[in-house]
Image 1 (cartoon, rainbow, N blue to C red):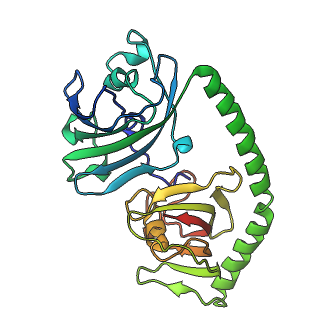
Image 2: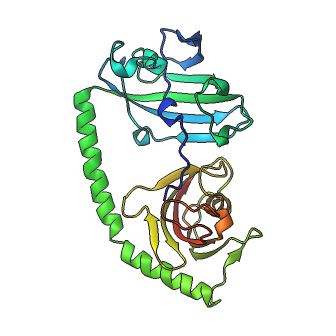
Image 3: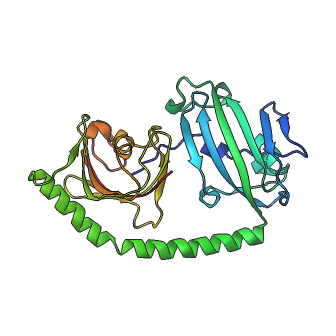
Length: 294
């Protein structure tokens, strides 16, 4: 299951720029950008990889994407001007100018985009705020990727050990709920959840970033997706429509550290259309561990 709604512009929102001074400038294709802070780190060269943090939102303030951990972003390779990947790609024009530590913002009119996502309905501009956290050459990048792969494989193996216990817990919780044995929290929408363990961290609010582990199951007991086997927690901005409605709603009621099972009616999940192996009109059950909210 794909919980997050992928935006067509994800590959483009890694814009960076660089000059020898701060201020407002234009690319050769006419896009305005602001260099807020000039970094003192190494300048990017062809073949280098860029790591960055990014926040993308509409002119109305709706957050579409936020990555606060630069190592969680998709690294961007800088291509030579005459490379096939650079043709017609104004982003690459500025990649070759960036310095580590640059802080930049860009305002892009939505009518300049080749396609428009439903999430951009009513928006006139996309606003990007980017900071270049690291510039790596190819050798350093390859070493970093190898290290991260080993780390992720170890974490996935460790997290996978929890799966049998979680499977037993969520199936028993579903059975107890069907037998009316649970004291669940019921919301007006029809969504309900059972708290296995209460957290003490920050409460979910619209626009905050949630970091969660999850296990998703249908009412027949069939698991359709989980984050534990991958080892990576899932991160998304709360209340911004990047996940199913039931997730946005329940995270507004949870705190960091909470461990809950959520019962989501189909109209707050994938409704009459279904999704990737999930039949139409399916009610869904999720076991969720809220690792962080910030």
